[in-house]
Length: 487
Image (cartoon, rainbow, N blue to C red; front, side, top):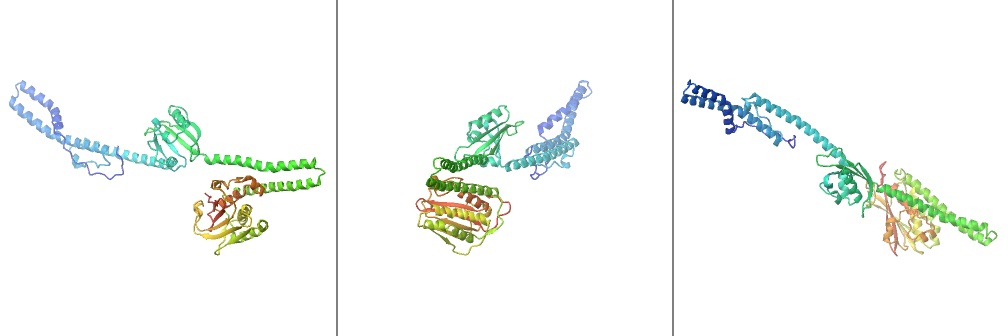
């Protein structure tokens, strides 16, 4: 079968003389009846020996000339057919090259027609194969075909990205060192039914996959016997873990003040029923605990609302200078209590940004409130607003153009580096006791992260122990495209 029927045709097959030995053999075969007749005539006395030899040679060479013409035609046709097997698309011999044998011409024409027919079928098969492979390559799930000895015969692009290399002809054990997976593949390859299992990659990725192993209806031409499909369920597993952690943390956060309230109520209804001093002290504590529960519930409701609309781009515009000035004004009593001051730095006029005013006000309310809570007394909190030409690397690619950068710097105790990646997790606290004492719910930075994500911006945190922390928000200056999803 030719390798490709798209190659340019070769020159026509020229007339190829038949081999001398073959011509002589065919001539001798054709002349056998004549020789037998001459021998019979000599034996009957009807013909002398010498004339018989002469006439025999004449007939032999005359027959050889004719046989050579026809044998050459068939030899030319055979040579063309052989070229069909070895070459691309040779042109059949022309009629003058096959002038003596109509049978040779018919054979050559039939071979050419057959070659064209199979050429078209080959092209269609190749096109269908390329189309199927393109579809499989575009699938996001890794697909791997496995043959004997666990040799990988084919893998799509997703599988190669998963392994970080080309997988063809590699052993499956070098890619997936999971005994359960290898056992399932061996079982299916030995004639078992399809298997489905879950496995987790070892560090550093730690991704979790659902793996499906199915036998092929019949072995493929490349020896593949088993198809393996991987589904990455890491996000689902982590979301389930986060949900469980959230329920546990929320329950714990509510249980503590609720237990305090119940305890004080029981005390006031019992031993301290007639103790006015204890009643006043306990009521003050109960109010603090009730306020803590109220703040926690408000933050939970706020976080729920934000997450509900996180993938919907904001439609309004907001003046961040005005928002920050009003926030600073509202926090002035808290700052005065600690002898602190908030200084706003705006080196140049700043434009408005696309966004929801109330949500952005909550962002800077949380950041400034945290800066005042955790900053040292008699220090300043600096807020800087400046337009920059490009956002940071963790900003969505679709909005990583000109943006407004707002930095909130405090001069507190600072945060150790190992805590920084987890600061925006719900209920995560560096110092739990101190955070609760200061009235924190552990949800403030989680709310900030989700609001900034909805605005297609980015939040970065830098801190040094003993020097303070800088929380920086980048917000794009151009509205995000409708329906875009934050990365």
